[in-house]
Image 1 (cartoon, rainbow, N blue to C red):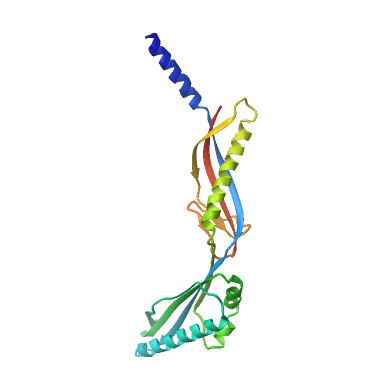
Image 2 (tube, helix red, strand yellow):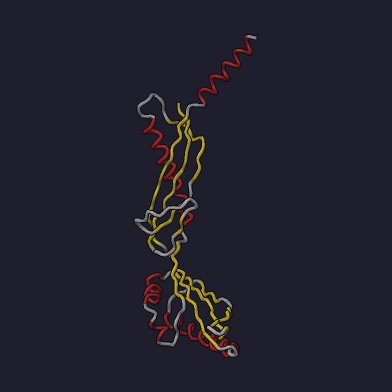
Length: 221
């Protein structure tokens, strides 16, 4: 019985010691620049009810002209993707009046400055008789995963520093990391206050700011 109470007392003491911990939320942020741009444009052609065959021929000519103009720019392309033509019915006051044909093309490149200049002022395409129904630039970074890993480490270190600050007025010391849980990443344009519970990944700006939190629990000794 004495031995049993001794063992129970030891376990009780250990459990009390293990309950000494502190929970904090660490924070880290970093600015970075994109190194890849995705430029998406849409070519289109409207035709009459009986003009779909002619519409396909015109779309083929437009795509050929687009490729020739793009080749003349000399911009390095990592990927040049052409999607199939889509056909939609067009309606007027009296019902269907024809069809609208459209084709999406996107280009991936590391030459952000040149593509941005062309997208803002596409005179080289306009002079070739091409107009875009839609033009969109999206900016990405091939180093994003490494940036995320580094930021998680920084946020965890920040959590430890906050824990040490919390217990600095006591005789306890921060010891081991018991658990850690990452929040979602918020990737925004610089000086943005945009946040979302499911995370944010802004692609409209080449300059970006990434933020993350880490909820951590440390044992105390």
